[in-house]
Length: 253
Image 1: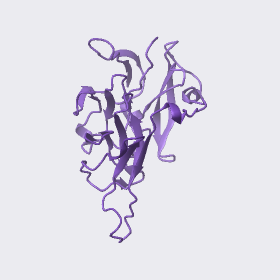
Image 2 (image 1 turned 30 degrees about the vertical axis):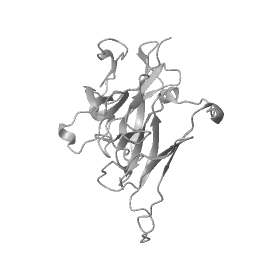
Image 3 (image 1 turned 120 degrees about the vertical axis):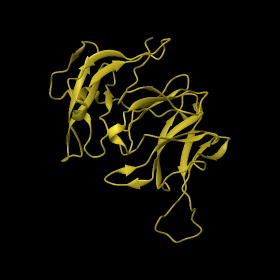
């Protein structure tokens, strides 16, 4: 396992080596669904951590290894995971100064025979002055979604990424999806699943490009996780690099 850096502002973005984690890939893979540990960034953007040593007792990883970007050394202390915790207070924005976007879903009861209840379960977006728009009526799920997980709206406020619960095991299962807020563009993100404890790495770039990790496939023996990108002027994802996880660093002023 190695930590690398990519500068997407460069003319030809390429991964650059930072440090070897001194961990094997097997150390950082869950035994539940074979997914990788997430990467964690401390609130001051100085520390990066990765979890390892899966335990069935907690259905999760028992240890976290933390790297200090400032000193270029690993943190040698048992409670190093605390450096990755964000204890900052959340301040709610003033609704009068922002374009409030609300998301909702159909009422749906799988155990009911009431024919008046909707026979599909859709996800909606509602903005002030623009009415209610369905974001999932064009998607073909393997199973009817039971509920949705609120997602990330793009910096330009024109698209959103959200999760759809289509089944249950030890954890909920289902893909992440992306849609334009006018409902015209809708797509299921292949290779993603919400059962992944930390959620797959995903982020919006300032120009409206969406990055995510495709890391969940049935054919796990022949599948390699990769960073996928959907540019603001495209509707199809493009593979960038074979990578299991990523975190976004803030731009340098």
